[in-house]
Image (cartoon, rainbow, N blue to C red; front, side, top):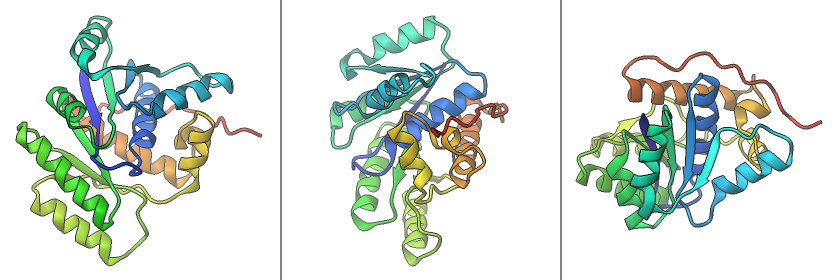
Length: 225
């Protein structure tokens, strides 16, 4: 079983959007997936509730987990045969961050290319490196071009973190999908947001499993009429 932590010390960078989308992508690739919501705001759980009440699939499994019980719950998932557990982590919670970072096989840090976000990303990278982990940083809400993007890439390189080779751009599919308990690739399977998520999943699967074990996407559109 592999563990992927989606974490940042700042809110509003797309953690839950990426965590839920990656969970669905992994499930569509044939993996047994669980998404643990470690955030007291429970955004991933809200997404799962919307997913059920609007008649969507009841998978992937989403659980509200107290970080103090994280090792125990992970052991239970391992015994149950799960392939992947994704941790959706809150901002500005050092104890939860430490718990998540300590067990993660892959650490994904979303960040906007803006000053305050970059500052928080830098703090998160340093936390990961203190635990001997090399995190991967993914740029979110990215404009097509701009000096900020290049500056962010330079800072990530200086921090000796890995830069995910695909950026998440500001697309309506992400927010519209979340409102209805979907993900971008379900809402608009042939859209650009879906392509970004698939590339992010392929990167994550390769990093976690050591080979391109990301499988074939089989999701169908569930956009509401």
